[in-house]
Amino acid sequence: MTTIAVIGGTGKEGKGLALRWANAGYEIIIGSRDAERAVMAAHELNATLGNTNVSGLDNAAAARTAEIVVLSVPYEAHAATLDMIADGTQGKILIDVTAPLDPENKKRALHVPEGSAAQAAQVKLGPSVRVVAAFQNISYTHLTDLHEDLGCDVLVCGNDKEAKKQVIELAKAAGMAAFDAGPIENAMVAEGLTAVLININIAFKIKNTGIRVTGVPRD
Amino acid sequence: MTTIAVIGGTGKEGKGLALRWANAGYEIIIGSRDAERAVMAAHELNATLGNTNVSGLDNAAAARTAEIVVLSVPYEAHAATLDMIADGTQGKILIDVTAPLDPENKKRALHVPEGSAAQAAQVKLGPSVRVVAAFQNISYTHLTDLHEDLGCDVLVCGNDKEAKKQVIELAKAAGMAAFDAGPIENAMVAEGLTAVLININIAFKIKNTGIRVTGVPRD
Image (cartoon, rainbow over all chains, first blue to last red; front, top):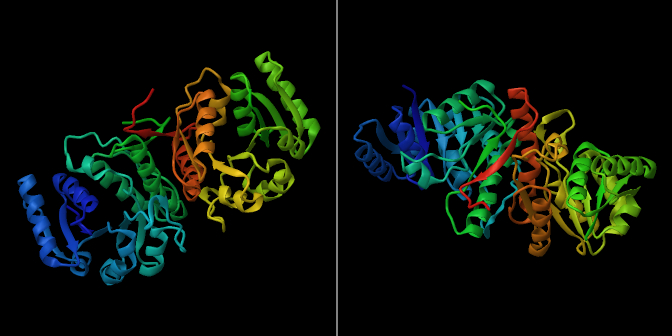
């Protein structure tokens, strides 16, 4: 089965995604700046699932070892982390989960110079990497409870149709419906929705709002 | 009752919104570059509803006469139309419905220099106008069928809380649930969702996809 590195996999969102994919049978490598913390998070996930298919490495080694690389870090760490994994991701799919928020006000989507975090990743990693933006809006508490209906669709943006198909399959394996949401220029929408949902969460004093596409046929 | 000008109200989306608000009892002024076309569209709506609360004027006069101004034009006409209504909107709420799409590919959200159409409107109209971004994602065929459940929530972005409250009330009056989606920097999300939904419409060969916020209490 495909090996997936989750860079930033010791964070809440990354760990939640890793848990879902490990549970679906994928080989998971948690990546962290600190290999020891990655190994600890991997042990934790294996213990939760009663499995042995999660391991931990430092970010560069995790990216080098995996077939698909998922990047789940705060935007503040985005550029520096991309530098660490640039070699390891050449020729691969990079799924960018990053949602740029204004550091002074998390209710405000940050307009980044490249247009979106995913576009910034594409610029930094170069044309051999197929960058796909996805999974920014999924509540990590929902991810963590494996029995929970996630209640949120995944918008998948990128310029490589085949890569988007693979990401849509990964979403399905993790219990989510996902939609091809267009080219990488649309990534700002999926990324910015995170800020929109933070506004609604705060207004209603809840944690787990999401979005659903309406009017489409469902399985 | 409040008088609402719908600038670009001879277009599909604008006319659909005008119909819904006229049906809810608001005084509606259809605005068009051509006053005659505006009057014709107003007659059509009055005939549909059996009412007399819709009238037509040229864009500048429509904006000047109304208390709230709604701007529903293609992005290509956005700047020129703002010039026409700049005087008439001073001190008022402007609801910007514009969704910038790449003219060469409507599946691609256009990244505009100001960040979003709504922010561009704010720059052009000046600080006395309370710009609110909303209603970009509502299928006009749904608007036109008054008995139809719209199946789409409205994301309301802007920097004036009181203005956003009024827009949320207008959405309710038109049969839609609306949410305060944060400051005007988040308008790019609501605007760009139009391009995202166009992708999904085309993939499924349907016309009326929308989005719903999940996990929130509903009336």
